Structures are given as structure tokens and as C-alpha cells.
Length: 92
Image (cartoon, rainbow, N blue to C red; front, side, top):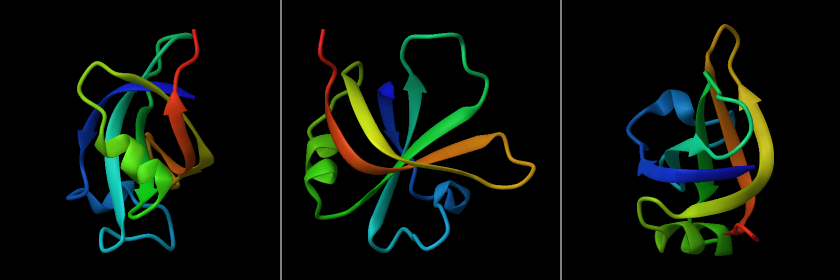
């Protein structure tokens, strides 16, 4: 999934999938790039001290990145959280 406009949002505990916490993970709300307009709020959650976390820490507002991982949503929620396995640049 291609995303942009990362905003650190670790204070919102609802963003963290089961088995994760703000102790060793960081959550970012993001805007999905391309495709149809998405009404679902999307967050990416990344384990600290991983290559993906280090890549995301270097991003600035407006950068477009590609993330891969596992999607989670809570029952009756409009929030989708992606537990990131990999993050990198969007290839043109």
C-alpha cells in the first residue's frame, strides 16, 4: 500500500493491533495514495528498532512510501491498522 503524510499518533491506543503496545511500537496515521478515495482511517504501526522504523523516522510530510504488512481492524471500527513488515520508496 502506498501512503503519505505520516503523523505520529502513538497516544491513540486504539491504533495498536493485538499484541502490540506503545512501549515498543510506534503508530502513524497516514493518507492512502492512489486508487479510490478511502473513507476508512488508516494507520501504520511499526516495531521500534527495525529497518522499517528507521526508514519511517527519516520521512517528512509529503513523502510517499510503500508499506507491506498485516492488516487489522477492530469489530465495529472504521480504523484499519497495518502492522508493517517492510517500508520503502514508491517506485515510479
